[in-house]
Amino acid sequence: KFMCYCKTSGGDLSQSIQESGAKITAVNAELKGATERKEQTEANLAEHQTSSADAKDTMDKAAALREKEAAAFAKLKSDYETNIAAITKAVAALEKGAFGSFLQSSSASLVRQYAMEQAELPDSSRQELLSFLSGSQEEGYVPQSGEITGILKQMGDEMSKFLADATAQENSAIQNYEALMAAKKKELASLQTQIETEMKMVGDLGVAIAGMSNDVTNTQAALSQDEKFKKELEEGCATKTQEWEEVKKNRADELVALAETIKVLNDD
Image 1 (cartoon, one colour):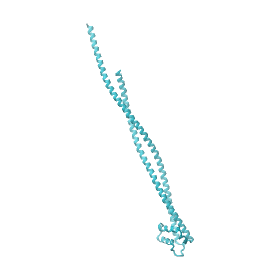
Image 2 (cartoon, helix red, strand yellow):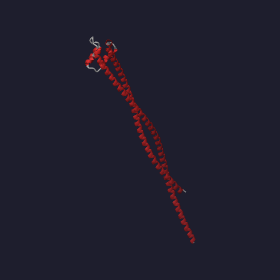
Image 3 (cartoon, one colour):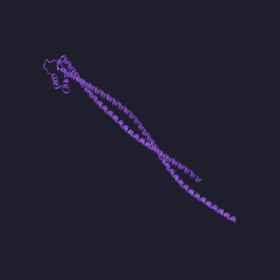
Image 4 (spheres, one colour):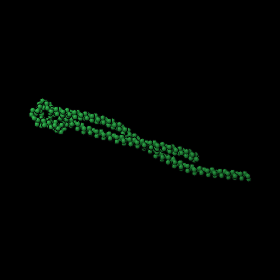
C-alpha cells in the first residue's frame, strides 16, 4: 500500500509542480505586459496633463492680452472720435464764418493740441494752422476760401482713415482671439477625455498588476511546498523501498533455508 501511495502521490505532485511552473511563467509574462502598458499610459497621461496646462496658460495669456488690446483700442477710438468731432466742428464753423467763436471753444483747443503733437503736416502748414488757432491771423482772412479749411479737412480725413484701419485691426484681433479660444477649448475637451480615460486605465492596470503579483507569490509558495513535499516523499519512499527489498531478501533466504531443511528431513 505504501509503495502504491508513493507512485500515486509522486505522480500527482509532479503534475502539480509542472502546472505551477507553467502558470508562474504565463502570469509573469502577463505581469510584464501589464507593467509596460501602465508605464506607457502614465507617460501619456503626464504628457497630456502638461499639454492641458499649456493650453490653459495660452488661453489665460491670450485673454489678458485681448483685454489689454481692447482697452487700448477703446481709448484710441474715444480720442480719435473726439478729435474728429472737433475738426468737423471747426470746418463747419469756418465755412459759416463763425470762426471767432470757434477759437474760444474747447474744440479749438483739441484741434490745436492734435496739430502740435500728432498731425502729420508740413512745417509750413502746421505753423499756419497753429497761427490761425491762436487767433493771430490778419483781419480780413476768409477761411472758407483759405488753406486752413483744407488743412483741417485733410487732418480729418487722415484721422478717419487711421481710425478705420485701427478698427479693422481690432476686429481682426477679435476674430483671431475667438478662433484661438475656440480651438483651445476643443483641444482642452479632447485632452480632458484622454486624461480621464488614461487615469482610469492606470488605476485598472494597477489593480490587475497587484492581483497578478499576489497570484505569482501564492503560486510560488505552493510550488515550493510541493517541491519540498515531493523531495520528502521521494526520500521516504526510497527508504521504504530499501527496507522492502531487505524484507523480500530475508523472506527468500528463509524460504531457501526451509526448503533445504525439508529436503534433509525427507532424505533421512
